[in-house]
Image (cartoon, rainbow, N blue to C red; front, side, top):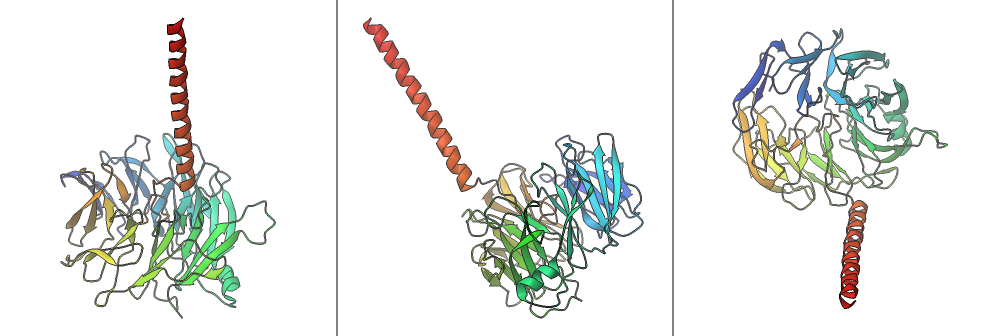
Length: 437
């Protein structure tokens, strides 16, 4: 918890007692921290931006400083993104400034090697990261104010792919001018069920675009192929600063990710991930409360045990609701208003009782915990930070195997069982012959 003073406080999820606090490290409260294992000890650490313009890594067990980055002159956008960018098995860190200075810290066991790349475009969206080319390392994905999307390869240490949000929409809509500043991290998930990552982006103008990357060796004029698009807000000007946040998860049990997005008028809209190539995607469902708009970014997890993700959201009266992912209907609600709730919901087994909890933080420092009857692995974190995982992809990572993999596993198990049965049969037959002899 980043306190009003900028001091980071760690609490035991079960006892609520303080573990440590960073009395000598003051954080920038406008930049969310991120949790990930930096020092390879199997425990989560905290990476955050300090008030004096450094990135700092803090040991999750003791609250001690692990490393501090060089001073960043320009305002940095957070949270930072944490992943292995060069495939060496160590955890690296990246963040970008408002003026488009990408700073990547490569872990070198005892220190960090920092590289700065000027992409030449202003940015307001946090970075995201994913392995887009199946090389075992994560690429850094950058969304810019001009709607240009860049993919930085940490192995090659250069921008390897660029495409234009505006240009793609021009082609899809038949329009002549599009202006789509990107304020939300680029999402990454498999939308069309081909088991390869797709990119999902929303713009400050209220457009949502989903694309798949094109093979570099293919004879294509564009780096991407547009899957589908939709408008989250009609006739919108982009002066409000609203980022149109979204979350990615399987909402309809078709084993591919879908999209649920919050609009600037307080509505939630859901869209199936599978769509008609290049066409406008119709809504799967839409919900807007009569009396109080939704205000928190959507968070996803399966609460009603139907195999599809549901949505956790807070409205402007600070009441918590859980919506059915398949139709948007309320399946649980707490109408008791919580005073000054400022955080989005976070989902984890906080009490170590194998039950999923929902946690909210209030402006006065109070913590609200809701205990559900949804079973979860002990200590499991489903949505523990602002944009889901430490890679900021806004995606719920499902552990459920795909139908193909599940079928293959069944076949392998059957073969093993038949082999054992056949072996036992041959063994008993040989014993009978020996007995007769």
